[in-house]
Length: 555
Image (cartoon, rainbow, N blue to C red; front, side, top):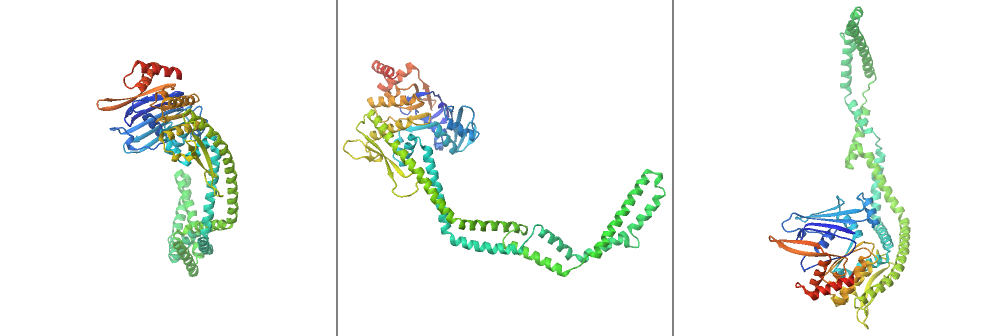
């Protein structure tokens, strides 16, 4: 349930705070005093749309915090835990709106998307506004209310998911059927490209090896000439390094024992002589075995030319040709698989449709039972609201074909008849706004009783209702409050007197600046406020006595 809300620089409120408890809390005040500001702000923390006009004049941003106790909402706790947002048994929602109209959302101090706020908010609070009857005119809303009332939202979701899967598969099959010619043309092109690359048969590391061999073959004369020059310097020349080292080693051999330094030098020169001899052997081997092969050089050049030409044709690096071949083969395999699986997909389509129809038929049965039960509940509340002759019916209209609709096998229509002898008509055709308001309230109260959401908000839903009927409305809302938390903004003293808790909205102007506050009323202040609502600004003894009587009866 909502336990605390803090508002800064929102609408006309510079700073506004309020604490909330279980039961029914009423919010009253003069017209324009800012009664609905708190509810509008709460709606923003639940994901409502924001704009720059909501920021208080002269301020850079509006900042709203709402704290909810979620110990009794396992669905919300699970949702938070799955996203690593859980922080004990309380949940803090925050919304910041800048002067430029940008908006930021937070859950327990962590930045989240607006969609996250909407999903979590739908588990925490349900707001019924005075314009709720407008949404009740929509068939989608009527279907949602019936499914929520019956408690089979999970089944309705399964039907929707089954329908989505069926339609997705239908689109895939349609795409396959339409693109058969394109698929064939693509397969032909792929086969040609794959054959070309397979004939090329470029192996791993082959390109690097060919480039190295080409470099060697193309520079054969230079390599042999340089090799011979080095060999002459090492061993074959009239004056060479090997002879010089032999002389040095022989000279040091006779005196090496006289000094450790000379002994080390003798050893190093001896090792150098060995290395010179080994290098000379390798140089001789290279000279004796190197063959200048023009035919091999021509073949290597032609091979490299084919590789580079193929790479340019496919617009890729030569070294990536093996990877390209693998990708093309996979694509051809997938196209062939789609073609081969066409019959399998058609069988899957039939299985999905059968699965959908099974679920949808089960949902239809549950909706039929729930519709009768909800009809009775709404008519009971309508009688309490002085509309005992009003007939309410929930009509389930089958689609009449085997179409797969996401909402199930039927559309839901709320029908009413406010005058005996007339035919039932859709809600949208009711002429009287007052009648529609009371019918809307009866539906909202009936569905709210089965709502899993612990906090229900009613924002001036009693507009156009007065007298004894307003008292009944108050009693209805009080009973709802006894099972959870109800917050009600009202102008009706008959409704306000039923509240377990009472907040008074006050608007004042200080230094040419408008300020709004919410004041928690004690028993004495409640009497004064109810008396004001009964008799206006001047509170008489009669209005106070009447207010005291109303409060004593309610409590």
